[in-house]
Length: 505
Ligand SMILES: Cc1ncc(COP(=O)(O)O)c(C=O)c1O
Image (tube, rainbow, N blue to C red; front, side):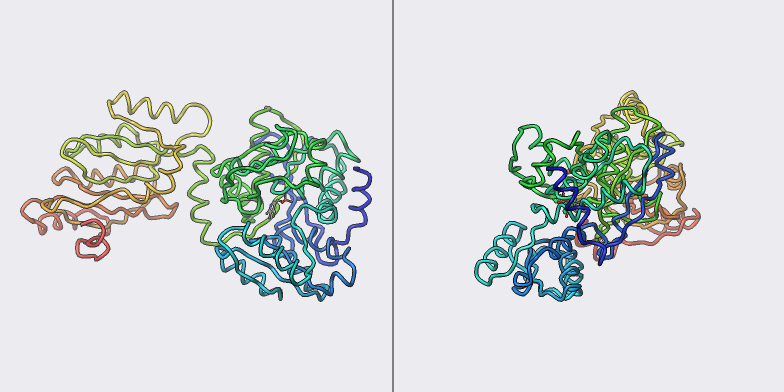
């Protein structure tokens, strides 16, 4: 079987449109992991992912009659763009059925390549069903995203390039897995020629369909599939890919969202490329492999499979990277509801640690719950030591670092409305950002007024921004502002801002 695939790969038609992408050395990562790490740069393809290889090779094998009927696929992402480009190059009409939730940027990218887009259904399954109906009704030629020998052979050209580009020993190649077309192609070529090289599949832990199939010895359908890494969000490994994977994939590693985000940052730091979460998956797997095995002084290769991410996702990805690197602890801490207790709490945290986030809202007269993010060192027990120090100081602490609900939602929702008799005034401040800056800010603010609302988020910018509610008895605002004028931070009174009035008053 491998020989048949190697022949197909050697004859695959991809270079009319696809590039032989570079294999870039990841210097920072190599140093950090004590191994030689290389990244295969499929993000540099003209459609910003490897998918053009399989789509073009499949189309190149179609008969003229099949091409004349026009091609069709269902896809919310990279396969759609690959097929649209391949079809345009060959002058073939393409129809892509996309779920209605597909981001506009992807719809536009497919249209820009001349394909007709049909928006149908709320999820991929419905789009696929509609595409197959159109095949039956209109006679279009269906081009599958991964479950097809010609698609697999097109993707396999990546394995061929890697062996040309790196003739020296390679310990392992890490490959992201969705439906398995990419890993099947790479495994077929590499295992035929260099069976000593390990092929390691990397899956998102909430769409690990290859791992499930390897464990059961047969393909299984996952009940649910996470879509954070939409490129690999597949519920069942492809039939044809699994024929290869079951014998030639050495191991499958699974990765969570935070680890993927951390790898997006790692790739950026080494190459200045911004990859999509699926594109960074294989590096996340490579890092985990080194951590689990303790291996050193070997050559490890991963595939950056794509870079089609919406710009507005980057904020969220950046937010999660610290968690993925285990550099941030998210804690819920109870502190006494009295003036000065914020400052005492910051003292326990110490001056050396950066506070990355601080959310607080007055709840009752006894105790306040704060939601706090604190930078910790990734190695050793820094997070445990921090929690221990807080418990020693008799603060009740709940560690929310691994709590998805807290990280996604609660952090932005701290609050509720203030009681009507609270005499609350709201001020917005700016202060220069550095370790200890939050404590300095609280020192300046003094103890004279009870703090009834607090929101702070470190954005990695030069200035920290804080929203503070102060309970001011007898409405003695002039006195407060006289004091605030003396401290050197810029501030704005926001009590009359409609956003505050609508949601927090
Ligand atoms: C960026 C990216 N990485 C990885 C994959 C997984 O490829 P396969 O479905 O062949 O396993 C895809 C699939 O679309 C993808 O778009």
